[in-house]
Image (tube, rainbow, N blue to C red; front, top):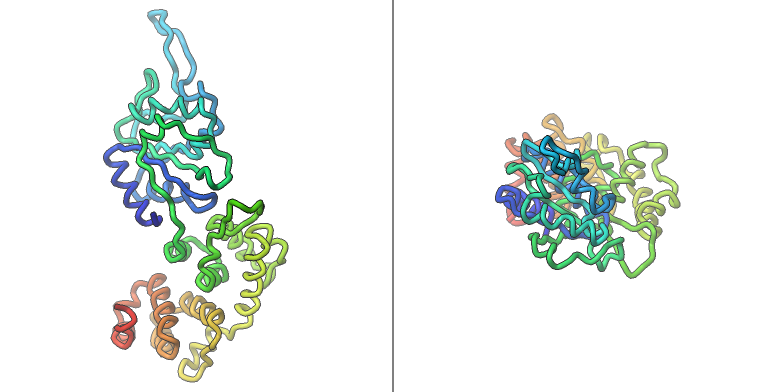
Length: 327
């Protein structure tokens, strides 16, 4: 299931207070999706790492009440009011006894005397057993308490997310060129580093430092693996030898249109980030000279960054000329 569908599904299941478990490979963004849903819905988020708990931690500590009876003080991290998401991250990495301690909480929304407030939903997440991550088989009694969703990586949705989250232009241009390298995890290999949405975010942080146009190959290999690092660094040599985008916009009728797909992806990324209402006519002039699929890519990304573009005559003229591609 794509992230956008998981987001919509989570909203529905949280509203009806149905516990849900998100399954996915390491680094695909399961935790980020849950945090995004909480933020969009205006909900509090309590992130409980079940793998760090002992079986008795959820129950809390006993004390003697005024009637000299033993009662339990629930742990501080369990909510007592308001609305939110109780997120049991890495639940299936926790030992079986810890998972068993979650039975009553997940199904009955209770733990002894503690009751989860009505405004709170329960979401859990974990890696699949086939991913060779640290997991324990989930007891069937606990698994039957959840709705189960499988998280699928989608390059287009990740690129849309990247535009609003300060991901380096070099990284997004490369993923457009090689979308299969956004997530290339093979559980049969013993690679310590491999490409995932999370590891490309790490690469973006390195690129945003702007210490050097092409970073050290071994450094990038330590983040996304040797194969992906070699391709990325090779792509950067093309990317940083491109003409200045301002030069392209100054002479859009005569500026060179590259033949190489990698170069075209890079040009579209650069121009989309520099397009505004003042230079839109010149950008559209250049876009009309590009191959249709790259023209759509450039204008679509520019419009995502500046939605005012779609309300201009230049955009309407371009859309009419490319109606056969847009349909």
